[in-house]
Amino acid sequence: MKYTIGEHFDGCYEGTSVLINKLGIRDDRELEELESVITTMKITQLIEEGYDGSFTADHYCDINRFIMGDIYNWAGTVRTVPLAKKGTSFHSPENLGRDLGRLFDYLNSQNCFFGLSHDEFAENTADFYSDLNLLHPFREGNGRSQRVLITQLVSRAGHSIDFSRCDKDLLMIATISAAQGVNDYLRQFFLSEIK
Image (cartoon, rainbow, N blue to C red; front, side, top):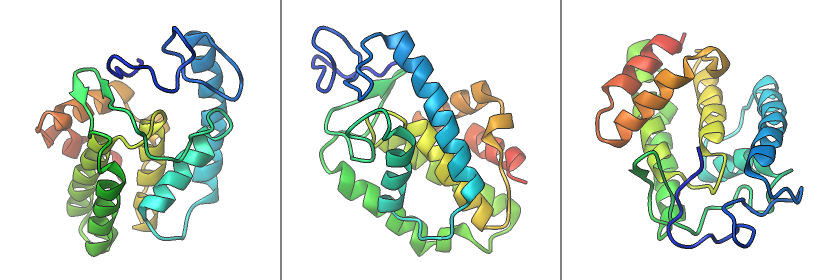
């Protein structure tokens, strides 16, 4: 489902809601299909490689750049337009970069939740996932970037999660509920999916 971006269509082909892309595709469905193929390959590569660096806002931007960079010139950069989707309005573009940095500062101040019990780790990860989702810093690829980052975080903590085997509808419902202030479903999702 496409984002709602208000009355302006910055970064879209004139008269459309199709994002200007490196492939020159002007059809929503065609772009969505090709984007899915490309990003699936990129996500698989990132997850297979693993990650042993720091969890920072820059690293998160690098994930988005790697996943979306073959498609969009702006991949990995913080968005400059307001976004909403399925009734959720995401963080306004003002101070978005600053607040993204603060969220990762918080993650690191908590030692990336390492050393916690399984349940504490899962619950803290769910809350971080929810906060990151509300920021939605990129014009496209936010969910995919989040899942890669969380997979890396979970793996580094000695656990595992496989989003490709998760119930995507359940995750979406839990994420929407969390955006409305109810984190219980998202916490339950991570409690059951983190092994």
